Amino acid sequence: MITSKVSKRYAKALLSLGKEDGKYQQYGEDLRSFASFYTENKEFAQSVSNPVFSLEDRKRILNFVLGKASYAETVKNFLNLLLDKNRIDAVPGIYAYYEKLTDEVANIARAEVITPGPLGEEAKKRLEKVLESLTSRQVKMATREDKALIGGIVVKIGDLVLDGSVKAQLMGLKESLKRGEYR
Image 1 (cartoon, rainbow, N blue to C red):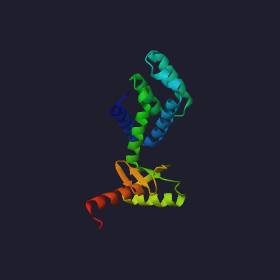
Image 2: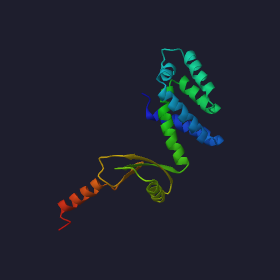
Image 3: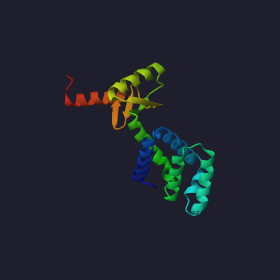
Image 4: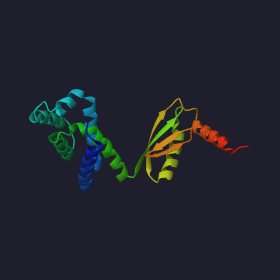
């Protein structure tokens, strides 16, 4: 398995190239598209990442696929470099880290919002505004439901966890009672 250290190094290198020529967002989209294709097509992934096949054959397959896509030339060269270095199987990890880096450049924070039930559009918009004022960044939210929550909401932004769930509030009350704060 390719380490995250390697993924980070390659993601930083591609971002550096993208920032130089102003196309880092396009490179990110191309990389996302290829990473998705690579992950969804197991036979393709095996054929280009398996060293049992000659490097020439693997390059031919990769370049055939790249020829069908409208990726930027820099991204195509980048993917060929990964193949040359036997790192093509790191593409999903490289994209994941690249996305984090581009979020930093664009001053975007990604938030995971967990609720016990569906969150209405108006509530999403209000929550997004509150999170943007809290983080001083543009927030992109991903919501999911967790039926284990009795009520309330849990928000995760990077390492920050804001737990406003009923369960957390009950646990806080329990601890306060144990300490004798309520009499």
